[in-house]
Image (cartoon, rainbow, N blue to C red; front, side, top):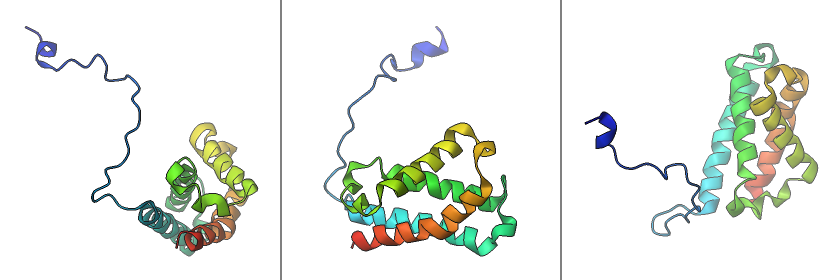
Length: 137
């Protein structure tokens, strides 16, 4: 008898499945989920800004926080439940956020212009998040 004989059948483990809706009882409202996610993103951006441009370099804690903030912000556009609120983000802003995410996630940091990235996360994203937050009230 082999070790695999004791394991449950997992032949369909990687079969795509339809997403299920969140349970209605006790599940937070989309506005509450969005509020919390925006707060997480804002905390990261505030830390980046507080550390200053001199600390912002590839591989630094500040740079990594900025990257995670962009990744999380971009992921919000993939959620249908936030679509109406995220309408306050312009098409150009959305493309910029998603392009920045794609560079960070797929092309690597060497493709990222650090000065543009710094201005994006310290000058542009705080205003975008503020507009989303105002629309989420």
